Length: 453
View 1 (spheres, rainbow, N blue to C red):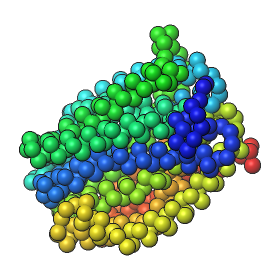
View 2 (cartoon, rainbow, N blue to C red):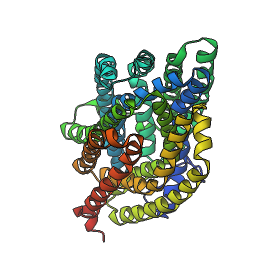
View 3 (cartoon, rainbow, N blue to C red):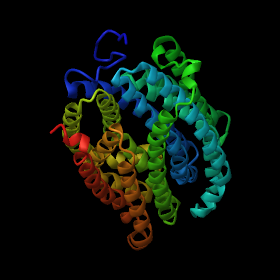
């Protein structure tokens, strides 16, 4: 495949040859910036809603976030799983198989998105009721999430296009398209909420339109610049073995995301019982938590593509070296993040929430200060999980999600009623430690990885 001119932000990064850490960082930087702008979709919604519509509307968005993650996480997990198979095909040099995997991924993804949209339309409101969402925010919450759920296919389309480009080493162009659409989202948010008086439903409409723009930009670029990803009619012919591999990889990641999000829904039930001010504070803190988690997530995504390509090329030694570099990266970065949160958490929560309520600010900042040191564990967890998926493991990463799910149930039943918001704060860090042990052991005891000691 012809590659663009090399440079720090070259469109394609060679992950199969040369310095490992340098390639990972160059590949991860656009992913990090992409994560920042992708998170801006919801964070800008939160900031504008909190500042213009108040704590009640802010709590409404927060109360349905976990349900939203549950519904779209499955679709996005499928997209990521499908792109792993494409990256493996690219690493092996089999471009015919690559095109067939793209064609099959489109079919599987579209069907899955339609099914999830239908399920979402049926269960959304009953699920909000089941989760004990406060009566004064439930209708606002439903008006927001129902719009976004209706257009899950738009979110899937962007993530599939971006995932396919990353599979061949291009993490830069999806960033450019996302920056454009994120800027559109900011403008549309302000317009719909402050000028058209659409409430939080306006924020949802702005999100969908902006993401639709990113999809169109991705498709145009792929058609003009990365024709290796464009399948022909014959590539859509059903290959049972390929479909089995794609569905296995895609749905294992989809179910993993679904189980994780289901655990978050259960945890949200425990949070909802603590009152709308606690919900608002936790919502603001979680937005900030997601921002500070982005450098770790970006490296995990880079590891996913790196491992998938090198597995296709049968370069297990490079895979082991890449994980070692990633773990060092986690430790150093976690120290920096922790110091930043200890110094500025209170100011950041106040900025994001727009609130002056002590309960909102104190709870939110306390959450961030305690969770900060555990980013190291979370980074190791994510990168090891993505590496396992990259070498073709389907069940072991899924087991870690079950551990998280069960752990959150235990906390909601046994600890949150007794210890309140403090139990909410410690819930995930404790579970991350258990998950990390299981994943690291699973990776280094894998027969393929053990061959390359």
